[in-house]
Length: 602
Image (cartoon, rainbow, N blue to C red):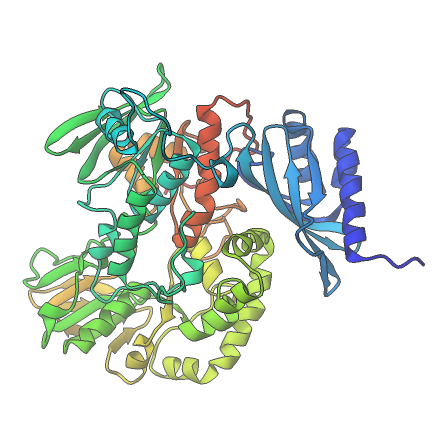
């Protein structure tokens, strides 16, 4: 039998795929995939974020989309090595379609395609001004009436939103809105990003004093402009705030601060939005064609309604309203919740001499920061990864190449290793009465985040205070809040917790809650739940969607989009959203495949 190399095997499979696509042989193309197989397409063929599972779904997508996308050609990326490990061949691709260029990743198992990622990178004829296409920045020569860069910038600021309307309006100027604004600027898409805070970055500055990123720096770069090499591994909130403010200016994002969105409605006749905002004491009506909610997964505070809140004489704050511990030295504080913010706030209060009790009503996933960095992130986002040639872009694409259906299978052994490494730590936590979990299927942090964006804490020290009793713990299914008195929190089991401050570290609601507030409930329900995969696990009801519900892709409400997530997602997915918006601005022919159905309203 003739020996063959992994590269030759991959090339042979791509040759067959290209030939089948050229013949419009959808069934033949799909049969190159294994029975259990996945094609994850990020905009390139589907004009959507869509994962096709199995031969039948792949054939259906090709039958619907291939004519509009053809010619479609897959090639091995000559800059990359085709690798083989554990019986799986992995290869990087470049992909060419009629209106766009993309990149991809291929995994072959037993001679058939197991996973395929196709991700758009640029639109033909509308490439970003990068490298040899970069702008001159100065107009050489002498002529009367010539305008400088500053003149053009000031003209744009004076006109946009007043005498000239933006094509895109982004509501929310945190990391997501700013990253998208930078992408839109580079693509030449007229835009305004609005936020009610006085300065970009205030979304971080105004949070509790001890807040810092629990994700490491390699995971958190923004588009185009990575953090410098001396940036701290875990950036403090105010440093992030200053970076976002600088980034907004340097990347020339059209950013309206101190601007509050009052309401919005879609004008069916004109196919545009009518958005009323208040800025500098006056109301302005904006008429963008596309409206993006970038209000953040941590945007709409979930504040529980509890009997006695009106009679309690102490302070009550949602975690988003808690600025820090300074005023509570020697005071009694009850923190309701046991996830990231709850732990951070409890630890800071204890450091400042407060008497702190954490109320844990449901189990929490805990992972120690050093274990997460080493075992969970080290191969993709670390100095070790950078040294081995895994750039941020490559790490993002590797992560994106794993379909969500099987991602948990890859995560379970990672968290098995973490549990083994930190077994003594976890035993001490449970001995202290803390309710632990590793997700419904033991797949750990990332799957919990993708499914529900809650229910976990990356431990940077607070757990030791829980273990030794410095942070007092009330944990159990019967430890919900019954009511508040003038000076205490009373639990449903009768426990009375004296309190001068109650902090509701109770998380945030779905982003479509902002749609209900600013547009109406009917449009919010038309869109449905934002976030989650449909995994049918806790707080992520089915049916299976296979992508983040309503994020970064077309929704059932025309010309309404959602953008956000952590810094990694804001960076990576802002490209795909920006290119979808650019294609619509330029009137490129497109048909969206697999528009998400609405199964849950909130």
